[in-house]
Image (cartoon, one colour):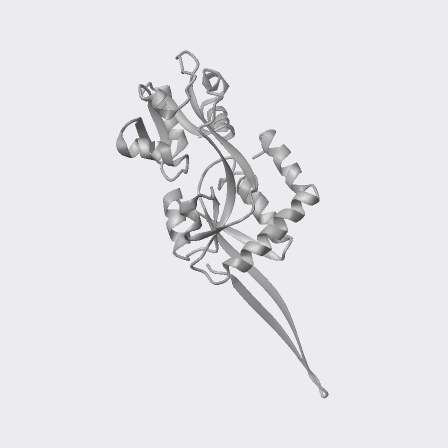
Length: 256
């Protein structure tokens, strides 16, 4: 669904004049994927990030609807102009070729989760982990070096469609580590597997990467620069009035 501006007109006839009143409604359809607590069809506000996006646009008079897709498809479909924006992505050089990036919404640390009973090295470079079977999720950004190691098979990386599948493989001994955001990983473990099992898993403190998260607007759509400006203004507003901080506090407390 593209940006829709609908005008409802009510006409009053009289002996003297015709008076028309119009009300404007602005709707946006944004592509997204399932990545709780950041984005989720079943979470409050459809996830922390989507909640922030909805509120930022609401301050500027827009109503947002979300269409959930696999991450790779959500990127491709939005890039081709099927959706008004994509929630959400890192602002890489590759991404900037076909998208405009919003101001950062938050920062994510991607780390390696593993069972507590295995020795996980104090790694400095990815090649230090060549003895490990690592679970990754299709469509995630991670780093260029990470995906190059997968392509060249210098690391044993198994790519799945979602993080939960990777954690199931980890618990069955089919993986040694899972690469995922620290907050997302902890949420999945506690919600999907329970405290007892979650307590057997930890994560390495060294991040693979720390990415800022952005709303992406496709360069293939003529209204994208306007919507980029509108969103950034709304995001600034909710950071100034305390709404963003309240949502982030709720995120930390597990309310998403």
